[in-house]
Structure formats: C-alpha cells, structure tokens
Length: 388
Image (cartoon, rainbow, N blue to C red; front, side):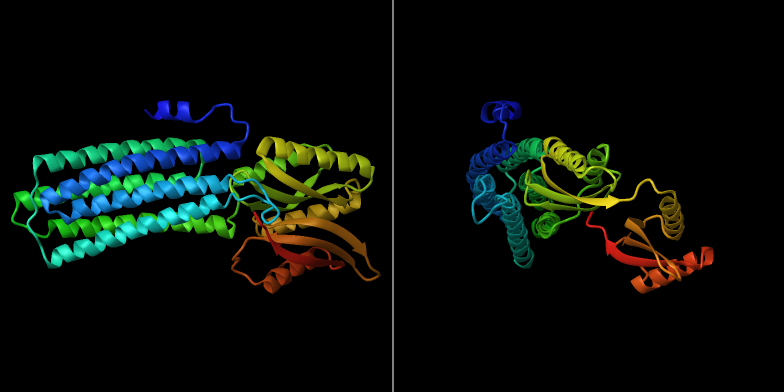
C-alpha cells in the first residue's frame, strides 16, 4: 500500500526538490485525514459500548489527528510557495511552523487524556471489555502502526520535521491504544477499579514528553542551530579542492527552511596571484557548492602570504603553541608586522563556545608562553567563536 501510494501520488521525475517535498506533505495529510476520521467514528462507537474514558479519549485524539493532517497539507503548500518581495528567501520555515502546530496538538492530546484519567481515578466507573471493542482497538493499533511506517517512509525521503512530528503522533496513538486495551482487560478481569485512570495518566505523560522533544527540535531550527559536521566538511572540502584556495574560515550557514540554505565563507588565497585567476577559482567553488549541495554560496577572498619562509616559520610557532594550549583552538588571518622594539604576530583566534576560561586569561596565558620562546614576539589576538 505504501509503495502504491508513493508511486501513484509522487512523480519520480520532479526536478524541483521543494515541489517534491510539498507533494510528500500533501500525501501524508490526505492519508492522515482519511484514516483518522475512520478511526474516530469506530472508537466513539466502541467508547459508548464500553463506557471507557480511554476509548473515548482515543476517539477525540483521532479527531485532532485529522486536524493534524489538514495542518500538514497547508504547511506543505505554504512552505512550497516561491519567493516574493516580502520573503526573498522563500517560505520554507512554514514547514517548521506546521510541525510546531502538530506538536501543540500532541500536547493537547496528552493534557486531555491526563485530565480525563484523573477524573476516572477520582470517580471510577465500571468498564466493560467486550470482544468487539477489543478487536476494534487492535485494528486501530494495526492501522496506526502502518501510518507510522508510512510517514517514516515519507520522512526518510524528505527529512521533513513536519512529517517526523506526524510519525511520532502515530507512535503515540499506538501506545495510547495499547494502554487502553490493557486498562479494559484489567478493569474487566480484576476488581481493581483504577487501572483505566492510572494507565491513562502514564500514557498522557509519555505523549507530553514526545511533544516536548518535537518542540525543542522545531525551536532549535527556528532559532538557527549549528549545521552538521558533514555539511561543514563538504563545503570546506569543495573550497579547498580549488587550486588557489589554501584556507577556509568564518563559515556561516543560514537555514531558511529545507532546500533554502545560504552560506558565506572567507577563502585564504595567495596574495601574489593575479586577482582575475583568484576570482575565477572562487567563482568555481561557489558554483560547485551550489550544484553539489544545493546551497547559495558567497565567498570572500582573504589574500595571504603563502611563500615567505620567515612568515611560515612564525605560523608554525603559533600553530604548535595553540595546539599545545588547546587542540580545539584554531587561528586565521595571520600577519606579521615588524616594529622597532618587537615583532607583532597578528591573528584571529577561534575558541569553543562556553569555554571555562575568560578571554583575558586565555590571552595572558598564550602571551606568556610566546614570551618564553622569544621575548621579542608580541601577539595581537582577536578572539572569536565559530559559527559552525
């Protein structure tokens, strides 16, 4: 069924990745609406027959899940809108917004289930576990397992956080319905009257925690999380493969939604090469990154002295000193300025975020160590943090 739906709804020859993501989101939403409305009707009937608040809560949850399907469709459509004058980077972040709305519905499900379960503990009622009701709930679990698998397939194809939220919602439903069956059986086969409410509270807590996880991931994307090491390495390797690019630093990556990444970086290039050749090398790197990684790239050239033995010796001194102080440190924009009483080594030092030492302490430590090697050397350091 999964392959059939994907094969007939998603064209394999979509050249536009954004349009393809929109189709996957729409497919997920349509399937979710149909399946959840069907389950809602069945479970309301089962809840009335068994007098179980858990079954009725499951039915309400399926109704909200149908709403999640509508949100997924609208979110995919809005995220796929092209750029306009007010949004020059497109509308891709709407995918994150729709995932956030789905997570709020997950919260609502957990809250309502928890509230109903507490009421069931305070005022316990007789719960009847008829064979028909149990079979209906088992059927519901099987359908939700397939929906979770289906949305996971779509998620793997798109890495859409919105589809990931829908998949998690389906997993939550499986757990909630399984707990409902357990509560029905315990309440019917034993004199213990509080199983329905206690199990409902446990499931509600698990549902709320899953919603918290999705919200954290969505907010992290909206705030601007650090890119993956793989992406950073890919960009740097493409740049360094160019003949005249000898170093990369100050790489900044902006995520405006899936398929809408803009990046900038400084490329260190030899200062004695014709500027036209350097520009052509940088231009090739930008085009290769755009073609290979689907990233809009902007590279700034930093001319450096690459063939001066004296400067290279000073570089080696600084490199060894920094590596001994902390291997996590890096430096760039190295220059040498001779004064009458000293030789100034000027560079920018990149340190990790939340480093245990103050900047002033780091500067004093490194300065004292260089003085021990050569009293004439004076360091002029600007400390900064990496954006990746």
